Amino acid sequence: MTTLLLARHGLTPLTGPVLAGWTPGVHLSEAGRAQAGALAVRLASLELDAIVSSPLERCMQTAQAVAEGRPLEVVGDDRFGECRYGDWTGRPLAELAKDPLWPVVQAHPSAVTFPGGESLSSVQHRAVNAVREWNERLGPRGVYLACSHGDVIKAIVADAMGLHLDQFQRITADPASLTVIRYTPLRPFVLRLNDVGGEVSGLRPPEGSEDGDGGENITGSDAAVGGGSGTT
Image (cartoon, rainbow, N blue to C red; front, side, top):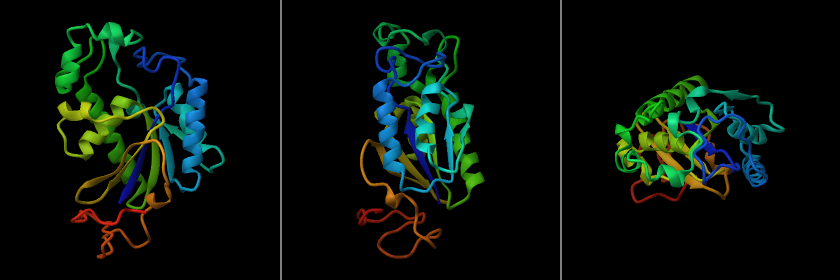
């Protein structure tokens, strides 16, 4: 039951008005550094087995805030990197909203390949493959954090929830938010989505829970019928 914590990077000067993509040198703003620090405080009590990050500066800064004081180095992994938006990179979102491709991105993202860039389906493919590889590497009791970008996180969540990529725009990943997915032999469980506050001590599965404990708090591959009492 590998547990993945997906963190989106904190705010940057471009977040919101501009599609930053792989624009180099985009660092966290003062507000973004505060968000990264707050995320680090929230996660301080949770033992992590690895911290992985998109190689882009805004993600590395966020991940390094979480890694501070831990015996872990942040490992860069391009597969968690932002979508390569090609000709859309660095352009204002208000301008892009008038592009004929915009409504396709909104309604049929699985059909989108950005001009001069990559397809959203390839983004999902590489990101999910990265998750599977890290899950295998860290084992069934591994708990790790991957710092990434909004569309990448949404694509991973869509896969975990068994949604077609065309539904991934229904998912939200705010700056410095935390999304948690637990992968079991049968199915993934989305434990938290776009979480910007709350206790994290219950995110590490209890000892001996690899196959479920048979009680009301189901922790294996079976869903708790009726909802259960929660994971904390």
